[in-house]
Image (cartoon, rainbow, N blue to C red; front, side, top):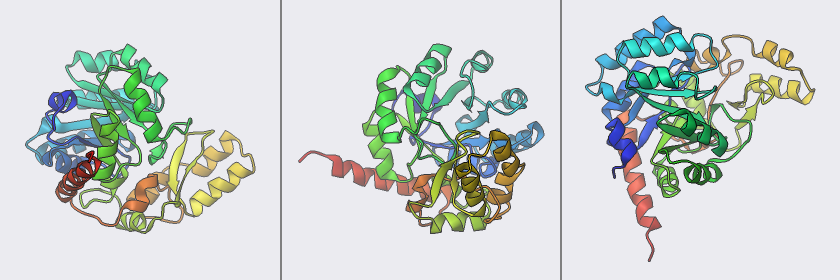
Length: 315
């Protein structure tokens, strides 16, 4: 299959490997690019110097630098520096989130780069179109990590966003196999963004204990928390229970922020503290049963997609 989005980014598979905090560095991004997907470095956990080193690492590990992207959450104070570092190193694909789509659109587009913005509602997708972004990533609240407050599910969100804008729509949230890809493409998406599935790959920088926790997860083992502060979907553990109790006791934003503290996600996802760490992962974790290489994953997704397409044919 080929569509305008895949042609624009020179991809051979309709998959974006999501840029996630602490688990999506240069190694994972390069492996994804080599497999025909868009490989994304998650800048949310990186200071500009670290981001620079990870971009250079990714570029050294792939012959397809045009398939590399940087994801920049706009809620961080160093986001403008991160964007400039990526532009200086020749990155031509950007994903922005958690902020206004207007904020850096001109800067990025004037450089000749391709810009995608993450949305959780059709209304925000329309604002992205008006701001001049190239595509939107419509993310349902099944997704892991930071999330929309409106709790619109992926299957409900995608067709509404497709109908609302003329831009290419990439589906995200709750997609981890070829069946999911077939489903959202049937709804009008031109590609998918997958995060949780790529956390559990060999090239991911997630701690092995975190990867094993994903393999053991059940469908009910995640929950969207801290909606009054910064909504985030978490794998249930002792830290989750502490946050849950605080929210049930009507804790203030300040109290929640104090409990969260600093470095919780690093402690859990990168360092492997499954008790006190913040374990950001999506609802689809319950479907994941193995830790393949990225190349093995993409090959398997293609097989599953083909099988799903056959099942979808009218008889």
